[in-house]
Image (tube, rainbow, N blue to C red):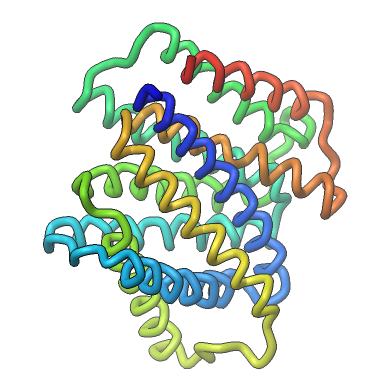
Length: 279
């Protein structure tokens, strides 16, 4: 099977995992707040990654790969924190797609400068993907400023840096760079909690829900890392950034958030974009 097609499938798997994880984290953030949602889900993810690395007997990655993994983990933590904050003050179906636009643009520009432009059909697919993300982000009437828009933009910046820095990890490294990212993020959050005198663990929290969010998030990270090791960064970033479609659909099915006609068309255009990028 062609490596670019495998990379596309891995990136779409990342989108499915991230979209499901974002919805799960959003529900958790509305119960215990963004900070504890990220900290607890990241801790679960860290433990799972260490277990996987040990079970697979993966050799410890070189310091450079661990450094890039740590930088990616910190930027991803910042992005997720702002995303969940946006979820608590706005609608998931708005905040997630808006963040994805900027998260897509940064690695696409970086890949164009370092790897050259992709094929014409893929470029058109990129454009359609961005249009679909914009359409998914318009459940509010035109002219209104959706709540949480600023948080969504900051989240997109964090995710865009995450995509780009994770691409610097070597092709033979898988779990340990992700472990370094989770460890750096968890350590920073614990230090922040101690310096601000807030509890590291809240009195009560939905452990099962946050554990699921953590597993889905590391699943998305793992799929994305394998995707960029198999193919181009821009293709993986665009397909991976279609996660808002999953979040919006779950928000509609489970949280009863309304999807208007424009969003439904956006999902259809996203499917067309996927076909143009992968085929």
